[in-house]
Image (cartoon, rainbow, N blue to C red; front, top):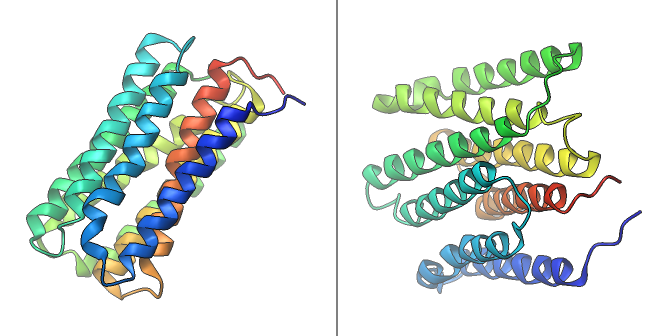
Length: 230
């Protein structure tokens, strides 16, 4: 089994240290400083990906960078979602684009096989998306359509992540797929907390799963780029 190079381990430690700092600030009287700590999380991931993307297909690399950039923009907008619903809509739109670009990236690495497991996975996640939207529907007011489009986009993203199976290394597939799954979990926490009922430790739940999602996806893409077959 291939050992993970030290610089990847060091970045992982630094990355989650930044995440822990941001979550800590969100629960204290120093939450104002999240205007620096939260954007720095994705900024560090963008730099990490840019420095380690060598060997990655050009289109896949470009789509990934766009997904990360729009995620960063979305993070900034959502810092102010309590000020105005406009910031939430802008944040939602930014992450919608991020999911679309991730889906494009995964599509470029797709397998041509369409086995029974893909259809079962599609049915399961479609069912989850429909159930989540049904629960949220009566709370969404005038943003029912934007939220439905967003849910559709993230479902497509995770299905494209699943379609990489068999065309990339096993570790790369699992990292990216579980990253995409963590994205759905994070967005579900965020939606429930915002529209239905406040969740205990909501920022830990939302930011924790979100950070794991982004990290796993990027590590998975880099791992495949570096030709890991284990």
